[in-house]
Length: 260
Image (cartoon, rainbow, N blue to C red):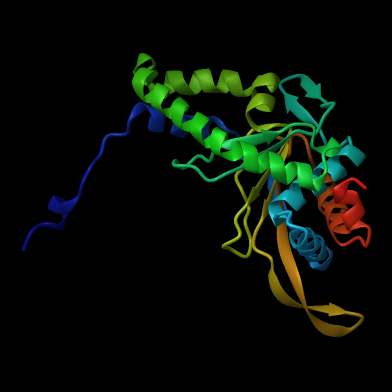
């Protein structure tokens, strides 16, 4: 019988893979995460109504718009910190993680989301997502070709640490707040990169919840917020999630997200 070790296959990582892994290693660990279950009945009504008019929107678009509204109303939550600098951005720029070919997802940055309607956000995502994927592929090919110029892991990590401390670099790459959705699982807590916090959303599915002392089957989603403790404390994370929940369950959700 052959030795199982003889069946092992070792593949040397190319420089694109090395650079991306080094990039993950220099990102500081998040301070904490918090989660909240949210009734999505109002959200479903908005999405279904738009679909009947031929406009395709998803929960992801709805979360992006809702997050931007919360941050624009609560500027003390919308901050970035690096070394001795505190930035209060003038616009809410949402970084949306999209599926790609590598273990680090490409990020589509949607600028000034608070001034855009739900329909405009959905249209922009549809128009730009393929371009973002193509840009990542071009970047990876360039790193595979030229990454050998920095052959040492410690040097790559030093360079990446310097870059990730620059607020302009972080804002350009991932925006001022991030959103990531994984609709195939019940709860998703995404890894924190360069913003102060990131919202993760699992799938919307029917769950039994209690209303007025009676059980009801209701479409709900678990929203999770992963936060940098150097910027947010637990109270701020709770404020953010509660404000987001109140907006998503509001009877005025349609007019708020459509910008009416």
